[in-house]
Length: 255
Image (tube, rainbow, N blue to C red; front, side, top):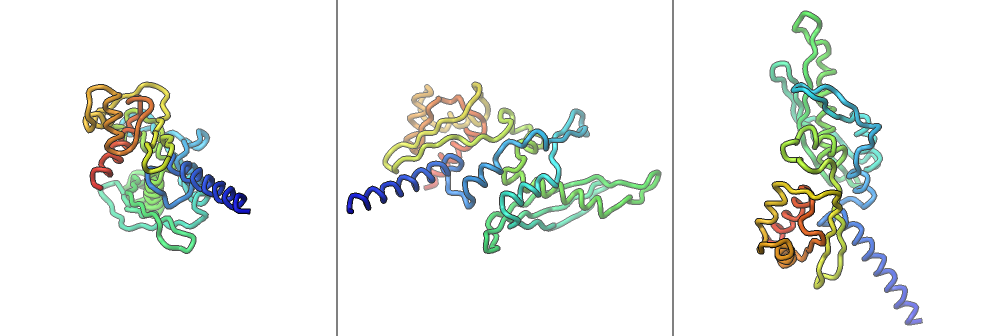
């Protein structure tokens, strides 16, 4: 009987550890949402939901519709979210709004809050400066703000990261969370970045400068000393993954 209870307890402990390992593969710290929600909002945007329009500075911009974003929020959070306009204004022929997206718990309490600005060009009646439909222009700006707030969570972040933050997103086309294996505190945590090709960039170089040693193995050893994390593939990592490791180092130094 004692052996049976011990076996059941060990099995339960193994299940809990496996669940923790899976969640830690997506975030470095515990997230307020579960694994399925994380996987859904961090997924690459399906091609059939990506549309294109001419960019003002030339070229083509990719975008998703407000309807798609709302469906993603409803599916991920079961309608437990709210969006409100915090402020609005008009600058020349441009309308802007400041939006606030609030993700709630099942009991209705605010859990995650994201704020962003949205914009829309004023549309006038032909040959005049009379607005065609001011309310519709405000609605367009509000939808733009909602999409940007949702991208802060991860929804369509590969689309809006590419079009609006090109100067900092030079390598990653979409966010791919690193795989993390979690063991006991007295043992090392191994990170195996998911990489397709050899990539270098500003964040990778910044990470290297924060570590001691002249070679990759020496710097990996330094990383292990600082944070308990160790790379298995040298510095063959993306800009985004390097940013995550830098955050881990800074966090350990604060502690």
